[in-house]
Length: 128
Length: 128
DNA sequence: GCGCGAATTGACTTTTACGTAAATGCCGTG
DNA sequence: CACGGCATTTACGTAAAAGTCAATTCGCGC
Image 1: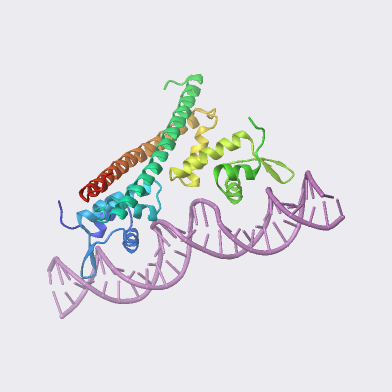
Image 2: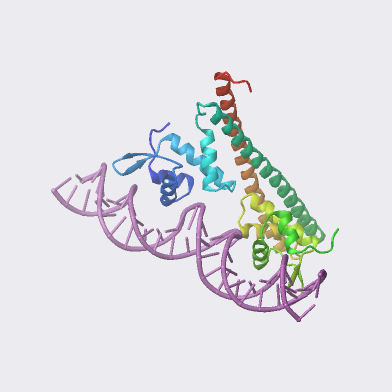
């Protein structure tokens, strides 16, 4: 496990711009350490970026991603906070389960659409 | 099956604004018929709106949704077009499969996070 | 010590997906 | 027929999430 990654290494790995990574830092999603003014990203920062990209692909906003990331952190020490966090986690899970249903339905419709295309090709005498 | 829906009926059903529905019409996603200047939405328009909302929940942009909707339509008559469409459908399906992986991973991480919270509560002597 | 490419910062711009306001049309009701 | 209430059109506004550009400024390689 590498100790540090430079900003450009990560922009290449995740195919995003330096501007984007700095934006995420401004937004408090990552907090790389500094050597002088230069950002040094630790493996934990890299893992956070992975999670951010996943959230983005799932269509979550920066704020939603921030919330999700906070859920991955150490659970709080106070009972009320803990219960609140569990509630939030379950809400987010319901959200994801809805997305999963949407996803399965969309996949099924695409399957139908493709089959219709394949049949149409067969009618036209094209061997798939 | 109702013949027509008014714009406000649909805004209530899908919890969106009239502005949004008009915007979708401008974008060519739906094409309600008119009585005078008033829009009349048919069941097929309503179904389209369902698909649009699904696409939105999955984080697709208007353009992506437009593409997906076109895939649900009658397959084209020309062989080249058909093959192209099949290619597009498979790309979109790969996209959705990536989303599904992202989704499962995120759900798993949320499960972990919740368990950590529950354990923490147990440590604090709270009976869940 | 110096040059130069890589990194940083700040300001401005762009795109997407609508929101909002103003002016006006249409239509059933009393 | 005046009125209330929903619909429409036009036009401008806006928040989120970066992109782009210009002006520095490191820092390492010699």
